Length: 178
Image (cartoon, rainbow, N blue to C red; front, side):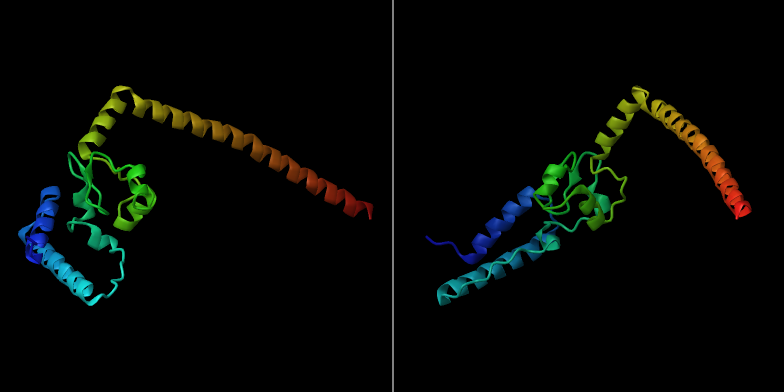
């Protein structure tokens, strides 16, 4: 017994709904799109026409229209490219979309400092760092580095001043000699 196109479309959308949460409007839209696509494929198959296969745009590939701010949740991060849910959006995962974390942030409007990890994971890492005293150690390191740069810059400025005064004297001597 062969299945009708509507049954095939319904099964496909049902599988999609089981994998990602969708609103009723999203389900209805998806069902229409799948059914229309299956109809076109059936017509092309019966007419013997080759269908041009194209890669869907990134916006169309994402199963739900999720805003970038909503994609980073307390217990998970949802990839805006494919809809995959994970605790942290890794560069290894983004390579499958042929992009880096920097490109992903730029495409979806995240600031450079925004972690691509679940909020609970970010908080846990922050608490662990504070427990180990990293903020205080970082401040001490930064201050020591500033002081070291200042020490290096001070002798350099004095050397440049001495060199400039020697150059003036040399020019004056050459003028007087002429």
